[in-house]
Every structure is written in structure tokens, then in C-alpha cells.
Image (cartoon, rainbow, N blue to C red):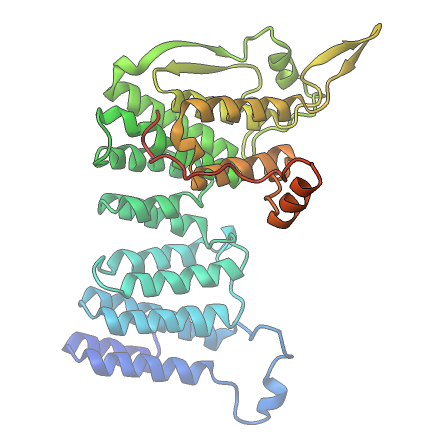
Length: 401
């Protein structure tokens, strides 16, 4: 490596000779010295409270030293020392100095991904490193859960390692189409390991719901569409007998299709799409023998329409008026209908997701929980009970399709 400082070269010499302890210590002490404020007039050099320290030439030199030493230590199998230097880079340089990891700083993502790629999947070191990375990138505007590109890379890596649960968690915070396709592969492969499904295809709806409902709850509508399209393709290729019929939905000449195609309809285009790439007229609805897969397709369509104030017109007296809230009513009817057919849609975790989607996309307030005192008072005075939740636990997941 040309153009490095004498201290940096000394770290490289220690690494070449196999003295990894000295290399780690020299890198850490050199970086600490570079990051320290000037001894003279230190109070004047310090930034006002709450302001980030400057990312000046010395800080950049420290960052390069820490990254290079961490990378080479990982290559030598010294994960503990390497991750210590890498977390110092994240905490003491990039976080302390407010350095971002957004679209304009893709070089930092590439460097971080190199470190993650070199970290062994076994043990705690990868998690220690990625926890620090996501805490930093969440603070610098890359995304509330951390940098999306790094999440996507980690999800793909965990998928290759057959860690389906952790892979899905990282991919679910990524609104990209590539991440959605990878997630479809993850969840489809995961369903094959389900010990409670017989026949095997009976469980695919639950795994599809993990992707669709989570994306819709996060308002990643395009990701939900992409995920389900790819997941359905995988499912029908593996289980062709599940397919019943396919047709355009909504029907091209229906009021709903016309409303979706109209720029003045007030129906929002899914985030991340243009009017030409979204469901501006009709999509293909594939009716399957699994009610759960049918529900998920219709759920995406319903969320795209939203409240749907301009979808339907009704005759009131001698004039036609816009039926306000038609989309909201359609969502309520859709959920109620399929909850009767698919038992696991009624379990608390799934119910929370459909309730949240109703609140986010349709303005529906969650049902009020029952108040035992008010119920007792109402019964004493001959009134009805408060609208509490139904008694009894939910059926076991997987009992319905």
C-alpha cells in the first residue's frame, strides 16, 4: 500500500511478521492519537455541545488505518482484534463525527461489506460488528433500521448460510425489488422445512404472509407486489395443482380499474413506482386452492386503492354521489371474510398486522378493548357489555389454508 504514514507502515510490518497483538495495539494507539484534540487550547478546539467533531484530515487518516488493519486482521483469522478496531472506526470516527452512509457515500458501504464478508458466521463477532454498523447508519439518515444496502447484503449472506429466520429479518427492512425477490426465495425454501405441514404445500400461505403483511405494514407496497409475484411463481412451479384460474383484476371496465387508471382519482401510486409500473389498470389475479394466497393478492390490491373515495358512485335521490370510504369497507370485508376461511389469520400476531395495516392505509382505529368495570356497571343497569375481544385462544397456526 503506497503513501501510508510511518505508523501505518509499522502496523503493516507487524502483520507481515505475524505479530498480530502488536499490530492491533499500534493501530489502536495511533488512531487514538490522531483523533485526540490538540493539547494546546483544547477547550477552544472542542465543538459546541451537541455538535459533531470535525471529520478532518487526521480523522480520515485514522479511519483508513483502522479499516485497513481490521481487514488484514480478519484475513489472518484474528476476528476479536479486527472487530475491536472496526467498532472503534464506527463509534469513534464515523459516529462521533457525524459521517453519513447514504447514497453519496457508497464507498463506506463497500468497505463495511468487505469487513462483514470476512467475519466468520460462527461466534459473536459478526453480530458485534453489524450491531455497531446499524446503530451508526440509523443515526445518519440511511434508514430507521440502518443502511438498506448493508441489510440487503447481510440478508443474502444469511440466506446462503441457510439461516432463513435472520435473513428474512434483514430483507424485510429493505424496500428494494431485489431484496423482495430474495425474500421470496428465503421464505419459500424455509416452508419446505416446516414440520407441521402435511401436505407440504399447505404451509406456503403462512410464509407468504410473513413477507406481504410485513411489507404492507411498512408501506413498502412495490416490495410486497414484487415479493408475492415471485413467491407465487415459485409456489405454482412446485405445486402446479394449486392453480385454479387466472384473470385480470380488477376487471378492465370496472369502476375500480377506471379509478386506478385516472390521474385525478386520488388513488396514490405505490411507493417506489411510476404510474406505468404500478397497477394502473389491471393486474393478474391467480386464484389458487389456498385461500391464504388469494387473500394476500387481494390485500395488496386493497392497499393500493387505499380509502378509495373516488372508486364507486352511488345514486342518492336523483343524483350520483361519490361513495366515501369504499376502500375502507372493502378492506374490512376482505379481512372478515378470509379470517373465517383461514384460521391462522386470527392468531394474535397476524391479527396485529392486519389491524396495523387497516390503521395505516385505511384510517381504521383499533377496536376498543373491553373494560371490566364498565361491563359490570352496564349489566347492573341492564345495558350491553363493552366491546371486548372474543374469549378463547386462537387456533394453532397452520390449521387453515
